[in-house]
Image (cartoon, rainbow, N blue to C red):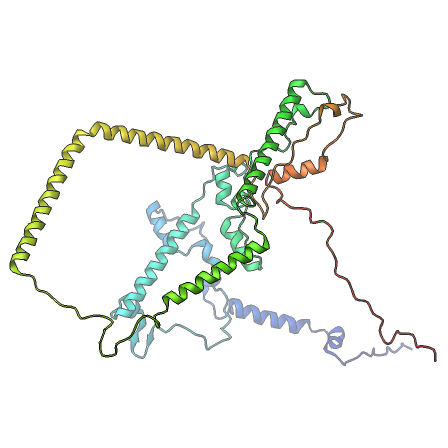
Length: 439
């Protein structure tokens, strides 16, 4: 007996279950052929010219000149634009598209644009032409590239043109910063320039040595002495200008002077009081602005005035002529004056240059406080030990470096504030944490 095969059972719940157990390849092939026909077209509809080609080898070759070949190639579409051609035979799914209608309501729009009659259309065409001309110029300038340059050798001028980074242009950097939300911070001009010509480490004075010569030590002491004298002179000047200018007065003398001033003021008020001396008469009218009386000039006085003005004018003209003659005679003196002025200008220019050089060496003011030169380190004759073990140190090396950084405009001048006083905190115990008193 032949064994009977049982039919396999499977789930028919989903579409994927049907695909697993049912062969639908013929349906897929039919649909693919239909799509191919839509894209390329059906062979039954196509012409014989599209389906079959003539064997060129058996046909005699057409001998064409280079000029005729160029004309034929010019009629053909460019090879780089073949990808843009629509080769599909599939119909447009969207039938209602916004297509440009060249003729609308009896109007020829193409004719209106190409040959405008109204002033509005003419102005629009002119503006459009200007815009396209500017675009063409930008494209022409943008296309020019110098390929002979070595990209690894960029000068300072080229780096300025292309911004801070040698690979990114300035316009691109600004665009990137604008659209990423980060602001473009303009750096100060002195960030890449030295603001001072001072050296970071200056040589110490030879008189500061632990075993200096007598000459070097005397020079150092004379420097310290001259600096101290300048400070004392400044203090004396301030004392003379402030405290010594005002004399000290006792309390009794001050009160007496105040009384005298008050009495003198009271006397002046009594003198100036008009009620006691002057008497007002009500019948007399005294206007604030008295009437102006116009007195006409006689003809004789007017004629004389004209004559005097003419005489004065003639005198002025004569003086001008005399001055011109005297100036011509004084040409040598004028040339000497011009030369002296030029010499003075040269001296002023030289002084300006010297001041600019001094400014480069002097420390600048970065904050509220001004930089003061620290005291010169020195040892007295009795403190000179002659060896490093017994030498007496005056200043800290860390403080010295800090002062040098302030002098070279790296750090602003600051003052040691000291320990700041903190306000007293009032402490108290909360009512929830208080101990209950015993009864």
